[in-house]
Image (cartoon, rainbow, N blue to C red; front, side, top):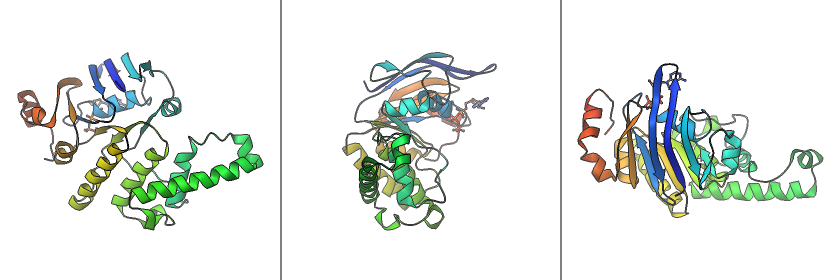
Length: 255
Ligand SMILES: Nc1ncnc2c1ncn2[C@@H]1O[C@H](COP(=O)(O)OP(=O)(O)OP(=O)(O)O)[C@@H](O)[C@H]1O
């Protein structure tokens, strides 16, 4: 199993935001984490990616517990995440933004960069090639030299995905990748995600857009009030009584 979450609990004062949650992400599969507003999805995501320290439980990445490790160490072990809000360096072109993300895995140390050794020059060239390949893969080659404020919102979301691809991580955590996209952008995103899956990556998504999830993923984990209430294929989840009740009970579904 690529990722295994076991008995994970996160409390904020008296509030149990995530309560003894366990599930797994299989290699090469797309898994979704869904649930009504306030169910604990983001908190769980933050615990998995090292942004929060859970109170209890384990997060095993390739059988090694990553709890307590800083986010950059977790990234080096092969887990990268996108953010719900688009974060780009505004003063850099799209190509440079992707190159910056790829730099995390380039192996260059700071002193080499300062001295601008030949190896750095070579590595810069490789980074540029890699970033260009990623932009081509995402059909964004035509915006490589543009600045973030010159591209559309849908393109920005793809750039965000490009940045996690640039890290070479095996497991990608995506925080609401379809948020704010129109129908045609969402369809493009479904195709892009399938192409990413074909390259052997595994993906864990938090997402409110149920149509997007039902069409794309192989497994769904459902949270409600911090607890896992169901886990299964889209078909199983669609017909699950507990899930239907949780969403009818006040949660928002953009189905
Ligand atoms: N930093 C925090 N401090 C205190 N309480 C928090 C914090 N973060 C989240 N919570 C609470 O924990 C619970 C779970 O919140 P969380 O944001 O994880 O849910 P969610 O499923 O991601 O919701 P949404 O779909 O609205 O983003 C909520 O009751 C929320 O108010």
